[in-house]
Structures are given as C-alpha cells and as structure tokens.
Image (cartoon, rainbow, N blue to C red; front, side, top):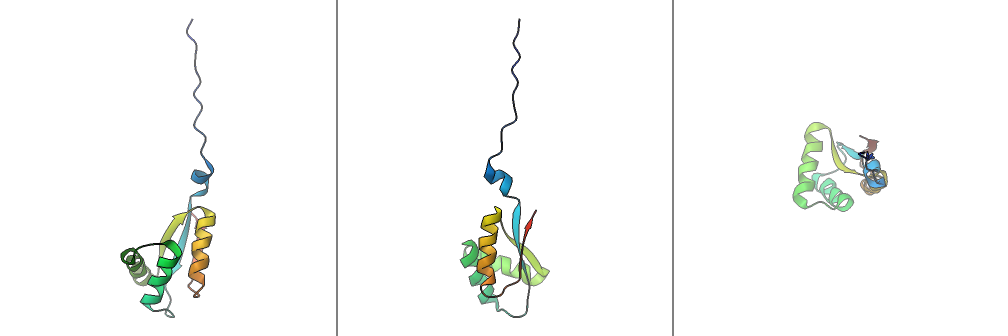
Length: 93
C-alpha cells in the first residue's frame, strides 16, 4: 500500500508579509534639486546617481515611488524626508 504525503505550502515569514509598502515623494516648488537629492540619499542610503534619478522622476512626473520595504522601514524613510518638509505618502502597494 502506497502512503500519501501531504505537502503544506511554506509559511511566509513576517518580512515577506510586511513588505508591500512604499514611500511616494511628491514634487514641490519649495526645495532645490540639491536639497531633495541629499535628503533622499540620507533617508534611503542611495548613491548620488540613484537619488538624482529619483529626484528627476519626481520633478517630471509630479511624484515617484522612491522606496519599497516593510511598513516600519518606509515610515523611517518618510520621517527623514519630512525633516525638511518634503511631501511624502507611505502606502500599502
């Protein structure tokens, strides 16, 4: 007699379940490109090139997703961006 083995789906760890969050940065006329670039670098740890690319995307599109991670990570990034009164939104994707 053949025995049947039931394979249960793998449980997702907390990180996988908590990662569909993003930080959206909105364009404004109050900050210089340099201010935004430096603050993105500070908040997300990106290179100068990546921060410049994202700043350009915000400028040309009016807004851009600049970070994806857990809710806590996104809130930390957003808090750093808000230090200079940048307009941000943390939302579930």
